[in-house]
Length: 138
Image 1 (cartoon, rainbow, N blue to C red):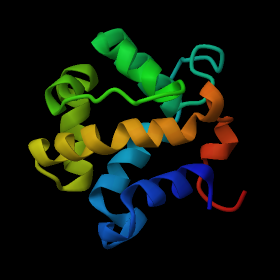
Image 2: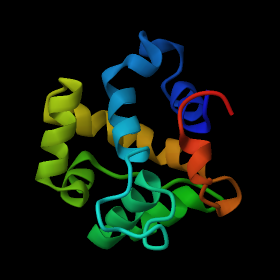
Image 3: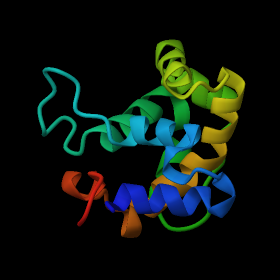
Image 4: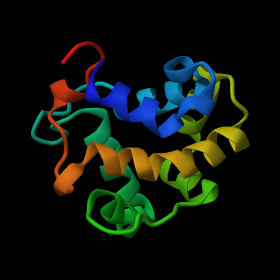
């Protein structure tokens, strides 16, 4: 399993039922492991989904929260409403369609789990290498 698989599996814990195939795991994978946007250079978005997601959240008012998730210390919470505003309606619609979760449930679960997942993916305040996020054996 790749780092992303490990972190998501740990974040969801044994209570998640179907593990990495659960709807919220699918949403996390879509957010964190997506490929770079067409036309984006590796320098602009060096690790695909995670770097792009963090940039998007920062640019949409969640810079302090994101920095707390990456840095040492307590992770600042993010509300479902803040996450919705930062991701945008189109991305939330896409994730809801992919997972089959209602918007409110999706955002509620992501707002609880995302800070810890990003924290675990960025030990010592450093973003993982792109290949570390890919599923499969390391």
